[in-house]
Length: 427
Image: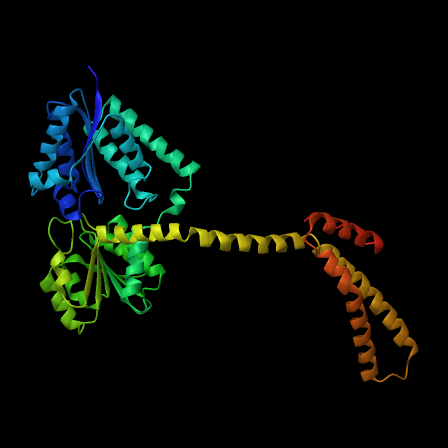
């Protein structure tokens, strides 16, 4: 019987965050149970569940592709709060070669919200690892996932994809810079310790945010992060008291309810005398109630918003590539001239030293015979002989700095021979 790989799920290309969060597996215990339920489905032989901010996708093997697609669609639709009809509108299905291609592209970060971002490969390995522990991944998926890891490695080492990434975290900094005239006097609050929110916080600190308040359900983790940020840790139960101090709030808690609500933010705004607040919700499911955006002087962005900004930036960089290349070429030319000039420096220095030594020796001999010269007259003779040397050396040194490689080599050899200058040692 023909065995087929099938992938069914939602991702950032077709499903907004409000759909993705309804089927998210953000708890290890629930994920393990879900994996066991997955391979208990009649047409499914092996299965791995991927659940990140950008996607919730089930990778499975089957001998009945049609039945498997139907079963996996129902499996996701049966998640808590997931409306089957809404989910169906945003569902993506990949089968056979398309499924394998999709998995490889995901592993290589070619299907990411930000192409080239490095986090997805680690996440993929983590979810595959859970499946291996539970026993839901078998021979086919073991091979397929390990191959996807090697594909990702080849893409990273043999192409420049990773270097072209425009991160979601840097997009957060850009948005913050547009909202606030300056970041140097601003305070940020990190609610939760998700990887992307931590990266965003590091970007903000690197771009001038002065103070960081860190809160987390596990207080030890808050203390650890606060130490990294040179910030202030606060207990999760008390963070609301500190909220009015925060100009920028970054959320990533993994909570299954809204941690920030409109009344809570409105109260903070009143204490702040309605100075603007910038909120970044990096969580899926979302940590901040979208209704907060209705408040005056509050700017709330979720993971999809930041991804859109990053994508615009990537396109902008593409459009600016020609200008950048021209600038690069110009700087390469300038650097090339400087580098070529380095070859002549030892000969020029040696030539100057030799002529200067002759000047000083002859001047001292002459001055020794002229006992009645005043100090001013002696200084005049010093200046005159120095000027003569400089004028004589000007033309030879100019030619020695020529950047035609053949002419430069000829002039350097001629100068060393004519003035009896030793060959410079290898540097």
